[in-house]
Length: 437
Image (cartoon, rainbow, N blue to C red; front, side, top):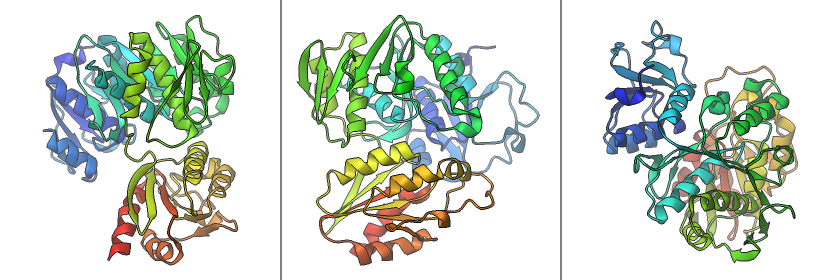
């Protein structure tokens, strides 16, 4: 296999996706000529265009070229593209293969876990940059400090990488130091069982070259044995201890962590980031100062505006554990009622987690559920948003009807949260516009 550095031109299929757009930005800054296809233009493709990356919504005229590196998103079927006869060529690869090859060329600081990995990767990258350490980074999100989560920094410094478990992406990535936030039952349609998912995490952890930082409050991670382990959590035996609402104990001294981010789950992620960054000779004072200046990642409990003292937030959470954490964080910070507008993501996930999804919505004062966002999946008979029931849960078929419901029910001091990984993110600004008109 040629080194991926040898290719001057890169073509990315599915370039608008969160994982692919960050790779595009990283490679563009590294000096490659980057182009790509996505089925629709979006906020993300516009950001890429501003950075000098060419994007298109039509690949019917594209022809295979042996001198171009092709990276294909897991969300696309290669047999439906112009590369269908070239799948076995060494310059045509999936995202996991690309990241595996990249990890042979650069030192990787990995951040993985079922929840919190995007925010934590962005936070770790921010801590380094705030302290004038120009690391590279790749994570699947848009942050307030660097737009798309891709950056090519000093080539002698490590790459901070969101090391994703979906499709077992992280299986072959070579990792120097790794932070693991938690293990939860997601992506079981791929792994087949929770046992297989835990096994996949365990295998990745066992191959880490230096230190593994783990969340000691996670029962599955607590069982992991490793010679070079640093632990964090509320657990008494953790190396770095968390005390709510904002105290972290490090080497027997207490530090107050100031942050605009709400919720216990963020404090846990911060403790993990502290543990990881201290491996790189950063002082705890400098790390905590950087955390206080971090405003988060878009779509992670992101404040989007207010109307007559009603605050609007948007969050990407689409798994029950994430939803519970986000709803609880907002509920604890609102004087009024919390309205959640939830768009289930994928029919398989809705089927596999239905009871837990319904349970997490019951924590809100009022929950509106809209139709399932398919993310390319075929409908499953009997799996529908109509099945969500409860005294505070209401099914509204169309996103368009939601602004009227919100207008008729909110009062001063309430919070409204749009929740889900689909196009529900567009709804908050639309409701605000409707209210202001």
